[in-house]
Image (cartoon, rainbow, N blue to C red):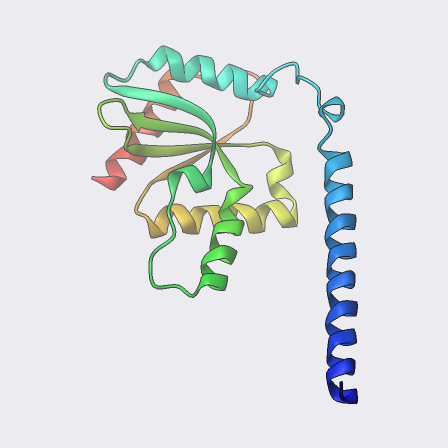
Amino acid sequence: MNLTLIIIVIGIFVFAVTVLAFLKAKGGASESVAKPEVYYLKKSLFSPAERSFAGVLESLDYEGVTIASKVRLADIFGIKKGLERGDRQRALNRISAKHVDFLLIQSSDGRPLLGLELDDSSHEEEDRVTRDSFVNSVFASADLPILHVTAKTTYDPKKVHRQIDAALAKKG
């Protein structure tokens, strides 16, 4: 066997051992984090302001409209075809971990009608302003209206109804 071939074989072996060690270490770390005992049941899906707002939305009783909550942007929006694989994955990653507080959906066919975001004081922080700007641009690019409502402990149902009607009318 010539020296070049021996060096190539040793190189492949070292590479394979390194990759296997890396994969084992990565798998081991994720397994310890994914153990069932690290999870607990939250007391509520909603913050107090979200629960109050959900009650107002339910009382408005829009005929033929379903109210969904905590909907991931990736469940509302798709990624356009024609992007390279890496660009497509980056676009998906940007929307996968973000959600909208509430989504009005046409009951007959599941078509999204309006996104609703409750904005508390955290939405004034720089990272949230950037996040909200991105979310707004995603909604706009798909011609789906989004309504931002200031988070409160109580809401005026008539005012909320007018805000929703105005946001829905913009879509036409």
